[in-house]
Length: 76
Image (tube, rainbow, N blue to C red):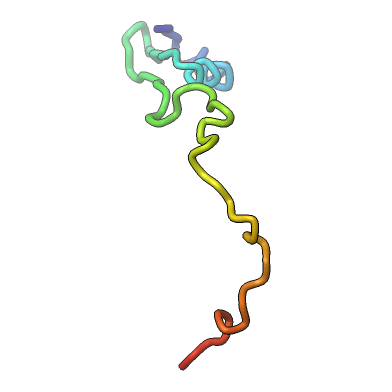
């Protein structure tokens, strides 16, 4: 956990957010007393793994084919 003062947090906010995105917690202090904590948001835990759903989903060969005319006719 890293502690920074308010001035440093304002000056280096982009770098602090990058550190938080990597999982680090940052405490912002005013006159040496902690007033806020920057933590990663829920659901965002590092980089996503490519191909994680390989073999679990499929797309039909006719996915891009036009729809049949009887499907497109709107009945009242």
